[in-house]
Length: 283
Image 1 (cartoon, rainbow, N blue to C red):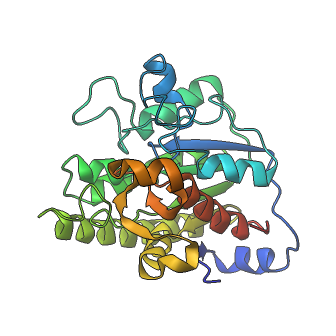
Image 2 (image 1 turned 60 degrees about the vertical axis):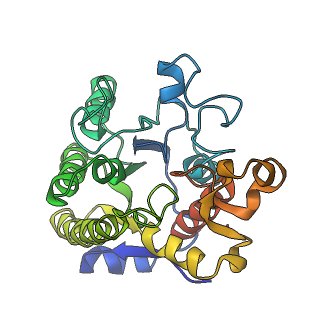
């Protein structure tokens, strides 16, 4: 199976990890991001109204458990709203360019640090955002990338040492955008973002050789699925399941996307499997 995880090492850390055997052990999992990682923040804030409970699973923006649920289970660590600070709709910085009172990733980090002034060096920290910035109109990829780097830097400076940083899927290829005039520009911004993020992570790894910073290549994962959907059990990778109500209620697992932005729980499962392989866990 194609491995879609890019490891970013300094030479010294690479040699150290090369000699490790078995699964990577983490004591805790902390998550910062948007709706792709939200396990109920928006649901709690809206008192169960968003996402609509008859269509979405327990506050997830999908029809079942999402990738962080599955990864936490594989790692054998708890995951609740005390560990997952991701908000649906969140951008990478402070506040939101459109929606009031919606905390960005920088706000989420401040909330975490307010109750966890001492970070855990044995925890895995997931930082995944940027998509909403571009979908909301951001055209300067330096800004979201710097917000993510600042978040990682703040955690690194406080002693955190385990990180998983996914890049972005092709924003011009999701059902919300793939038939619009904005698709080419969003695809180009995605590539810019991912290239700059990889370079920034390489620099952070050199600056903190005792840390382990993993870049999860979500872009390549979605490209592989779109190129050969049958290999993953999908028959539709361009449309949203909810836009085809009969098919969605009978066989949602055939779809990569549940709505026009978010994967089905089956899509999340494959993404979690790739992340699990990185830490020596069988999918």
